[in-house]
Amino acid sequence: MKLTALICVITFSALAADFEIKDPAQFKKLFPADAKVERLATGLQFIEGPAWMPAGFLVFSDIPANELKKWTPAGVVTFRKPSNNANGNTLDAQGRLLSAEHGGRRVSRLEKDGTLVTLVDNFEGKKFNSPNDVVVKSDGTIWFTDPAYGLEGRPKEVAGEFVYRYDEKKKSLTVVNKDFDKPNGLAFAPGEKKLYIADSGKPRHIRVFPVNADGTLGTGSVFATIDKGGPDGIRVDAQGRVWSSSGDGAQVFAPDGHLIARILLPEAAANLTFGGEKGTTLFLTARKSLYKVETKVTAAKRK
Image 1 (cartoon, helix red, strand yellow):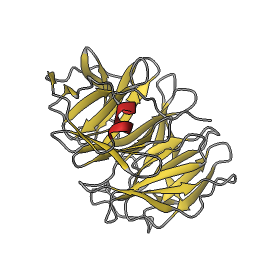
Image 2 (cartoon, helix red, strand yellow):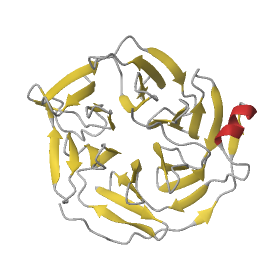
Image 3 (cartoon, one colour):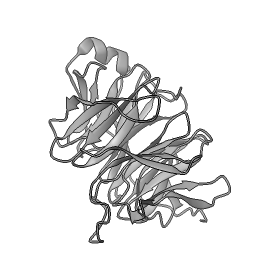
């Protein structure tokens, strides 16, 4: 699919740093003393799925606009349209962009030559609901969630709202969990021995699961509950802390589950990711606006 470059009308403004600090000692390890939240763009529709590209720019989804957007310091342009109402985005080990598409009811991949291919679009011959978020493990397997948020009146073919693991080499798709209300964001801990999965439905919590050698998940437990809004996109940093979007912006949890701090935004955030030149810039997609804040940490690396 051909990439386009349509300029989007945006505004730029700086916001005063706005944090609620719960653990001052840990907070100092996360943010520079002069850290501030900055709004990079606004006037969008509902943005999600930020992913930092190796070429040095941010890609994110504007779901109702049916576009993937590209941000650089020069502004925001259209990266791909239509996007099939893509939501979550991630990169594989080769730097190719994978997208969880609501409209396409699939997980797709953008090849280096610009070709868009379907990786997986059904379970046992039944169309997915609306894949929401996607991550890639170091062994190349693709893990994604499939709540029904993006069905938009289309018939539901898969009875449940599951978490899946897809092995492209073996063309094998398996359900790794069936007991979520609305499975949403997911992220591996450093070393990939644990997987965090957000439930943005009634529980509004993040659970953590041991990852077994055979690609199955062990018995999970509640890691943290989001008290403002619910968890959507989540990331884990290199020290194992969990960063979750929330109704008040974002919340950061220590590896033991206690709340370190909140990043307070004037809009509820839907997702977040690390990127930038040093990998220490946290980008937040929040309803109609894109924000960033500088940190002292980077994302967890693949094994």
